[in-house]
Amino acid sequence: MNKFRNLLKDVKAATAIEYGLIAALIAVAAIGALGGIGEQLNSTFGNVESELKGE
Image: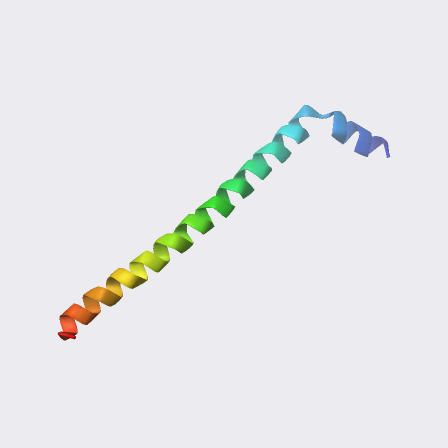
């Protein structure tokens, strides 16, 4: 129990947790943004393919 109390008082542990949360938030935002870009790229390459085939 004392180790847990010491961990809560430790500023370095709190900072590490904050950095971890920030990194997780950035990762979620990046995945969301790349998902949208991926759909746009798929559409663009589909249009290019259609034009090259002469359709």
